[in-house]
Length: 374
Ligand SMILES: *Cc1c(COP(=O)(O)O)cnc(C)c1O
Image (cartoon, rainbow, N blue to C red; front, top):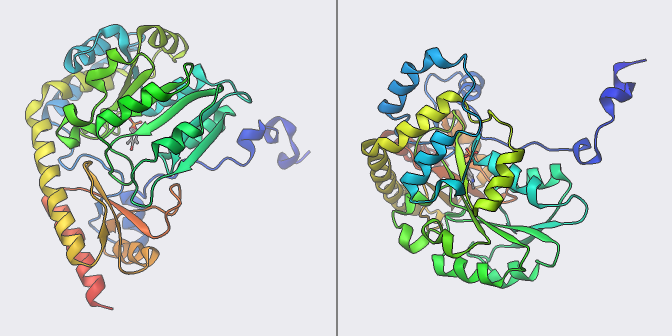
């Protein structure tokens, strides 16, 4: 028997057979090696431009000796801190190994494979697509408007009595579009009664105006809504994996029961609490991001790009030259951006994360050089 014919290893669920994985941004090491570069600027995954908070680093060092312990199952202390920080009842908070895990738990808890459906815009954050497929749940999508704003009527039109979840990302990824929160409140009132509205607010901090855009302060008035937040972006903890969902206690209880007990590790737990305390780092992150976003908007427009208005820590744009060629030319110069062909189906669009002042100007400098060489 050859290995390829071994049914024990070759026979998997039909959903898994042709599975295409989440396509992540290129890593710094890959690009250094491929092009023989010493320094690489990565503006591909919307990571924090200031790195990790010094307080977080100190707390991680001081807990290094505790990693032989399991974290307390369900991270009740962390959940209480998150609840206090965001002004929520503690029983509404479900922590996860990144908000990716909470998305997975929500789909598995709510959607019946082969029966239920999930509704989202197209394009959407590719974890919704990947995890719906893995769970064997139909994903229904409706295109964004041409300017990347949201067509609510079309979204509601896809829902029926078997719609388990509607996903909305605000600010949206990859466009940066952010609807007024009143529109999300209206959407919540228009959905079928069994349907959960999941509002993914991964980038909400960067809007600087939660009253105008966030559902989190309004959560208690809308029992059919769940809000997702992450520590990966504004808090600078992408590599440690920490996110949470805020939802009605009854649903939170179901998620906590099915959640693997130790998926949020002991360092992520301590780091998360320290990140919430470090308001200096957090405020500086927001300041540097707002300033960098202004700069990139201006410079990209001056280079002849179509720039989409963003309230997040990234900007989507369309270059005056072929997107694939621009991406390649930037890589040669050690700048990693996110092309949006794979995963998002936008062959002509690129997404750039707002970096530090030096990173932003290195990117713009390289872009200018590419344009002048033509
Ligand atoms: C980055 C991002 C997240 C966060 O994912 P984590 O698993 O918490 O790192 C969630 N949703 C969207 C739309 C994102 O872009």
